[in-house]
Length: 418
Image 1 (cartoon, rainbow, N blue to C red):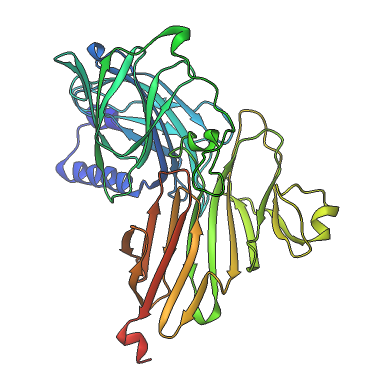
Image 2 (tube, rainbow, N blue to C red; image 1 turned 90 degrees about the vertical axis):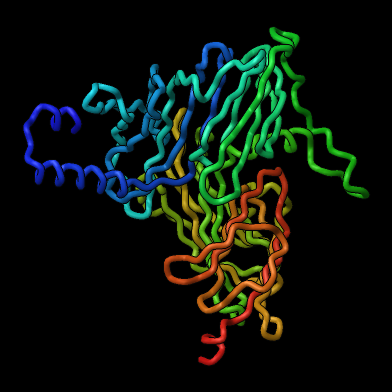
């Protein structure tokens, strides 16, 4: 588009229309589930490799634009469709001076309604303002448009400082990295200082993680070392609860999940003890394909030879969704929807709505019924109002554990009078 604008003389009115069109296209772009990885080279080079995963959500979209920051040089660009593993075409629109302003990635298929177009963009960036050697210390400063990510230090460098709460993890080759999740709304700025002094070569490789368990908390043993040192930021399970009127003890939910294991063709959701499930449904976010599902209980689970990872009791209930087997190098992203009736988790106590549930996903959201306002929240969360006037709470949990969330709410005065 930019080349066409330069080559063709235009009146002011036509230029205004063209400008408006480009603004409309930019504003129409929407996305979710962003995750970024930075692999730093030696600080003196001001160079780092970026791997950016994003899900395009604008229905009907056929391309995605990834802006190039002014003053940076971008090279070695590769884009991949995450569903099929196939490469995607990349072009670089330029401005009037011939400078590339963005990477435009052609999607493998139009984004389906209520679906996603999942892509990965890999690029090498040279940016002296973002990454430089200052008095013997490498300083990396980056405004994060992604809430989740990982940064890996150059070989032979140690971590001196990091301004965001982060996990510290080691790569198989011994490089040290951090993994972060930003809970605050809007963008955040990551600042990392690195310095030479780490071991390199075979001596730097970490020992293999084990299933040895923490001795805390007593009297039971805690999680395994392998679980505790798994990167939390890249886990891609998230869930949203929509609370119904509390007198019903019911809430609907949807949870999104990406399956990458070759040959896998089912998703099994085990219903929590004390809950009753209804209205299950499932579809593939990549294509919009609706999936077959069924609810099984007790002996029916055993007869179907479905492994749920724990003993099957007569009252055990599961919801199984079926999809085409995943092929090597490919993946599918699923959206599973259900309604639960769970008096232990959700109830009305006098005038108080009470939602008391353990939330195990990295990203968890709870939406109150219309006409209710928060009065208590046990775990810090980001609070907002939805477009239709309901209160929403978002929890980002960067730890490899669950959040025991207790929410209380009451009816607004206008709702109480109805």
